[in-house]
Length: 616
Image (tube, rainbow, N blue to C red; front, side, top):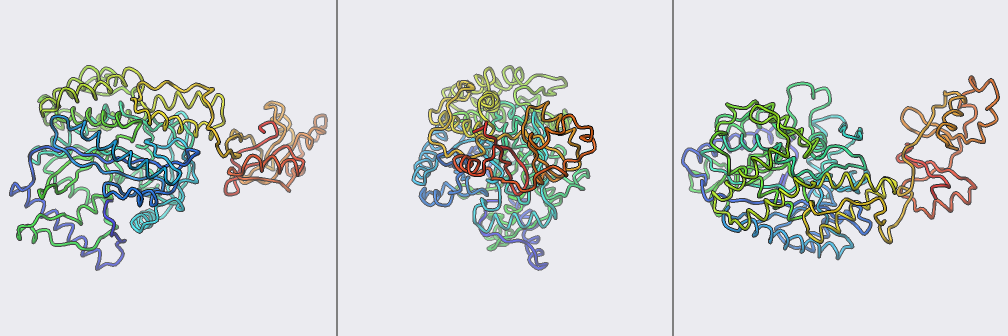
């Protein structure tokens, strides 16, 4: 949703006026297609770089507007999270050293952003999902304070009428309710744009869908969210659920999510894609200064199709159709939204070279692919790639093939041919595609992240491991070497120097607890089995109600009534607690002053961890 001047559609009159302009924009697009006004060549490419701001502890830093002001460059704009920004690269013609040119501009822009960030004691990190993110970073307090994001949040919540239910299951499992669209702010991507000849748009779009799974498998870089190891590209699941306007009761129906891979092949013309989106997804935003697009064409003007552009900006297919104007000429393009940000700029450009090469190198045997392949196989390929990365198998040409074999034996040779067909220099093609080849044979960003994180957890508690992982990503990005050359982090990787250490760095999150109705016999056995000296008492909502210590229960070891004595009779209700952001030194002082060796850690009144004297 790139437009700034938006408001919520509420009044009947405003809605009718907006829908009129929306339908009129479709008519205008059809007229431009019929009259051959849409640019057919040259083919251009472009990209959008989303990135994160972190503080000196490598945690998200909500200073985007201050940094943006210091950057003072129209290439940059805001994102929904106040710890994110976006840089828009200039489009270039697909030929010669175009990718080197994009790479150079990207480095220039990121250097400018990094210099501005340092003025505000922050740094920039490229990551599909920042490993050091925590739930407190995705509250409404961290939303960028701009009307368009507030309007979007209000409109989606009004449509949905209930909290967002996030459930993602990988090696770990994430299950939470959230009250805003701010979880969308966890996702950062490297969005790639490819201009498409309008005469072949539908066939080209279907090809983009067909190759999405294999392309994504080589580019995954978002395996960790809130310390949980989930999908190799967790963004795919998270973005789908974080902005879903359907209530849970509608998910099982035929209704399609606004974030979607689609439900079938596209047919007809490009306007049919827009018509389908308008039919499926209701408009809930409007903007001012909308002109009559058909009248503009008759007056010799090129319309911007503002109503259609706004509606299109609130729908998020992983391959999105876009209309735009460049050098005074209207054009159509496909926006690839599924490739994550990072791990390095050179990796991102390599991803783009790979995608564009395969898009332009399609052999004739794949023409009209919608008549040859089942769409559900292609959709399944995409989600397999998101879940398993390079470990995925794809159903390709009627048989199962590994991601490894498909990329090395078919897609990389296809990419070379596609790039050479459009005059891309061998120097660019060979340099960037070799990065993809090396990554396939070594490890991707997600594989590096998972192996490194698991090692760190052997030495550190979860939150500190998340911080160290983010710090190492930043350090390695500064050197600029592709992720395939990064060594997996060792368990004894050094902690962050001068970090403001808080309770969450050292607390235990694997917590055993009992209910107040449980028997003392159960408590005694649990404490002995697990060698623990304190037992929290919680209710069904994880609210802390009391605490038992070994001293409270040990006298029941040889008593027969331990089977009938309930926890409620013995537990202490006067409990000293702390929150996760309490400095460790303050926790030490509190334990000393209160003469206690155990502190429950609460978040919004719910038990999330424990701190004992042995942890200190």
